Structures are given as structure tokens and as C-alpha cells.
Length: 244
Image (tube, rainbow, N blue to C red; front, side, top):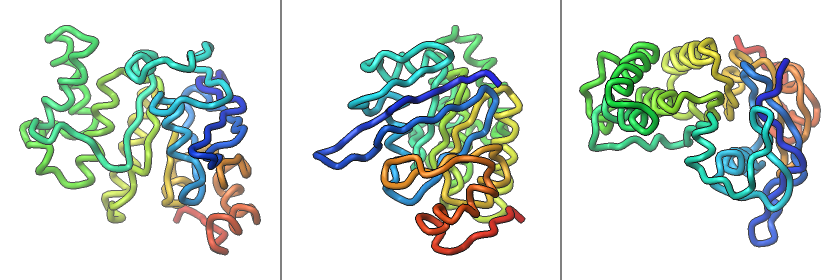
């Protein structure tokens, strides 16, 4: 497999607190990789460093074969193909669904191209029937879908999904997992940050576990979730996660 993203010795501290320490991992092109761990383990901080929200104190980030300059802007990283969602969706609340996506698509396309791309994304994400709905009136599930749609408008190579299952009921979760599979089938690599372990088992081919800012273990999701270290640090004794 060809590597898309690799971090080496990635570290960052805040006021003397080591949020992430000497982290090493990679993601292959086309992979759906889970990044899991207890609250405060450094998952979102890692995504923030990759996307440029935070600048690491040490270490390197290599994307698509090229090392990312430490101070490269968020916008320039997005142009490379790096996209991410947030735990809380951040739409343009006063705009409808179409314009939320179109506004992003317009950044790198002509008006005609942006319209075409927006319609393609609306159909792919099954949001077309909601295209005229103000984003503020969407359910939490559909706001999360629109966040993913807005990411897709940047033509990403990777989308880092930060807790897209949070707040969803079981039916909404299944629909959202289907959408993630659809996005992945489009050739988009996924870094999947999630606390819902059944979702991790359902869509991810590999999982890496952080604890206290360090890599705890990695491997096939079911194997990782039954690792005694993970059970002790994260799952509170609940092993044997099957995904059923």
C-alpha cells in the first residue's frame, strides 16, 4: 500500500503539559483508519497539528510524499487535499445547504464548475432534497453530513472525521456509516476519530490507540479493542467488542 500521511516524532506541549509526545503513525491511501483513545489522549490535538490549527513543537508531517512545512497555513494544507470536520458542525448558519457547499466549491472552481460540483456532492451525500433548507434548521445528523459535504467540495485526498457519530441515534448512525463508506469508495482516505466502538469495528480496517498523548498500540480493530492495555486505559473492562 502507498502511504498518504505519515507523522514522525510529533510532539506538542501547552503550558508544560505534554499533550502529544513522540507520536509515530501512518495512513495508507484509501484506508479508513481509526484514531481512538480516552478523552484528553491527544486525538483532536493530533488532527489540529496535521490540519495546521496547531504548530508542533517537534516532529514532521509528510503528506502525499512531501514534508509539510511547519508553518504552512490551514488554507494551503487544504489545497494539498487535507480536510477535517469538527466535533460540533460549523456551517454558515444563515445559508441554505446548497450555498454552504457552493461557497466552498467556489474557492477553487469557476461558478459553473462550482455549481456542477455542488450538485454532484448533494446527490452523493443524499442531501439534494434538502438543498434549499437553511442549515440552521437541519437535524444534527444532516448538519454532520453537510460538514462532510463541505469537506468534499475541497476535493480532498483525506478527510479527518472528528466524532461524527456523537449525538446520533442507532438508525442515524447506520446511515452515517453508509455515507462514510460511500465517501471512501470515491477514493478519499479517512482518519476516523470516534468513541463509538461499534462504528470503529464497522468501517475501519486498522486502529491506533492514544493514551496520555502517546501511542499505546495499533492493529486490527477487534484485536486492538481486546488488548488488555486498551481495556484498562479506555474501555473500563468492557472487552469483546464485536460490532454486532
